[in-house]
Length: 480
Image (cartoon, rainbow, N blue to C red; front, side, top):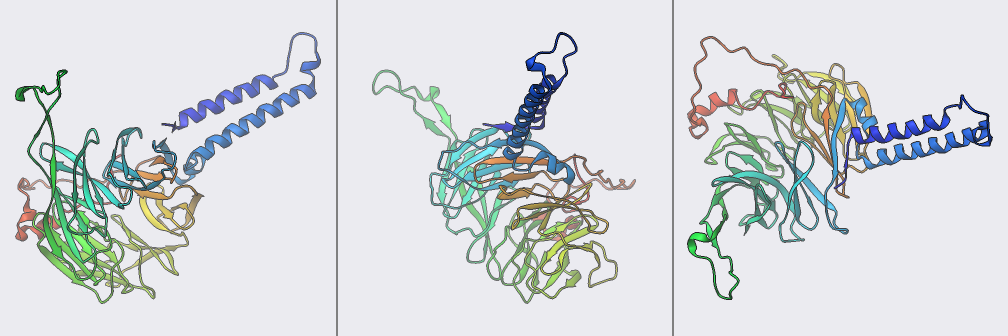
């Protein structure tokens, strides 16, 4: 595995610079000779400078995102690695499940990486080169977690710590989206408009017979080692109006949000799949909804950006434009930003007061979708041009931009101060983090605050409204 970081690059450039300095320093003692003549010294200096420039170029080319360019974006490179793979293999996607990082190639080899260092924890195979992998999620499976890879034909469970194959089962429903982790289930939409809950349960502990030296002799039952196995099963299913084409959104302690091509937004219970509320539009939804501060934001082909109350599904405000909306917004505590065709990146006040039509804060010419917000502004990624842009939050001005042409898959772990991951087809993966994190905002605790009930109220429909007020973390808060 090849790993790049700032310290290696700095040492390399410092050593070359020292060589250049030593070669160009004038001789103060001894008689001049042919080798110390001005022309000879100039030739040595030119060669050393050329070598230094070549080293700089090699270091810059090796990075997916050049460290000297991302500094202007308010970012730093945490690490970069090259995922081990065969000579003919190329990467096919990546998945961010909280702090968990997974990537897979076109041969079905799944790689799990450590977020802090980028080191490869394990690699496992789905046993098929033809199946499309939608994503990988971490789930509890009996006594310990497991990594569940969802493909278009089956579910494949890997041992959380080692990557050993635990289970491989055909799916009754063909997935159409990646899965979202909700409680102890992975929730996904299928091609026929269903929302499916999958979970893992530990099956019988299988006895693994180990052969002795003598043919036909085995260890006794008490000496046999055990092998853990799991079963993936469909726990619940619910119907939507039309097809579900975007991954569901899990709202901690409340439920699962889905949108469909039938123009429906629905909030389901996390633990029993029963609908809590539904919102109906007259046009399809093809972009993923987001939540922040008890509000659901979803853009639709009906040309509206809808802000819905998470407790009830009622409209808080609607912003109308002249074109269908196909992109997903990014919501923080004070601003909601959305890429609008023919208008650019548009920022709205999260709380427009009595303006039921919404309130536009600013418009920017930045192309692409906002993936996270840092202290310096919104980080915007444009897939078409492979360009990352920093947009300041006061007026939408473009502060800096850089092109990372080899970065094919780009994503962030959080809407605020998120870890940004870049992946190329040749297996290079780079992690970027904000240089300076936003200041966390804490709400003072009331003196007469009642203790929280430890029981999970999401099971009880009467308690959903109370939980929705506290659902999700405020996107304006961050943990460095």
